[in-house]
Length: 379
Image (cartoon, rainbow, N blue to C red):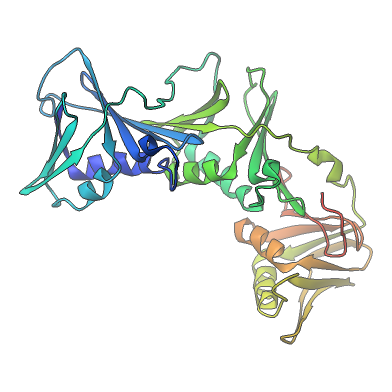
């Protein structure tokens, strides 16, 4: 196998598959990148058994040193990634692989490296199959934003694996991403074309979605999403992204979403975020409590901890219902305010010991639910 490619293009493909390389593994074979040359098509693949990433490119006539109908495969150590990145700029890269010894020669300009490759026969290659039915099609930027708006609410507690993932729910013409750490819940929904597969629920590890989000661009290009055995596939640009699914059951989140509220407030998002950020400076490191009081047309924000006290207020844009005071986790408030981009935010209160709901004003397809500090029972 012998091919040439400019350093930047090659480095880009290697950077893509690097996302699936394991940090630590008991299977040394996974610390390699699977490389396949099939005529004029060159494919790179890596996996940590939770996700797999495949990136492909075409080799033009100049880059093909030999026209062969046979398929050539090899495992190249992941060390090739920093090697290519540090090769001289504006130089083409030559990679020469000995079929017998699997020795890998890498040349860029006057720089030469040699790595010990491995036979690829035992590498767990992810299947590259076309969808059996019509896939879900989203824009890259649309999917990226949906992940960003939900993934922050997942849990890192491996003892409750269902909450370390994001539930992707496809019901007829509706798509929802739902995440919870048992003390808060977020849901982002949108209308889609009818989902044609029997499987409607997919619990995706948050780690997988974080790596996927790094690969997605702020682009209108299409992403094709479909199930494949016990995985979900995201195909876009020249990339195939595979993720395994969590087998735990996500609880019925609809039971914890109140159907009504006792108080509704509309507040300027930017001003409210600034106040909450200042309140976080004095909140206790353990409970991170902030107190919200609604009186007449004003919301009062206060914090009292061993460090000191802080009080501030802001006039509401609108208010309906009863006066109320409630204790909330200041970090939970900050998390949602960071992702809201509307001018105003809507807050619905359901009593001192009932969930509080926040959402961008007039965005009915997004909901963020937070349990008050005094509620001892999680979701």
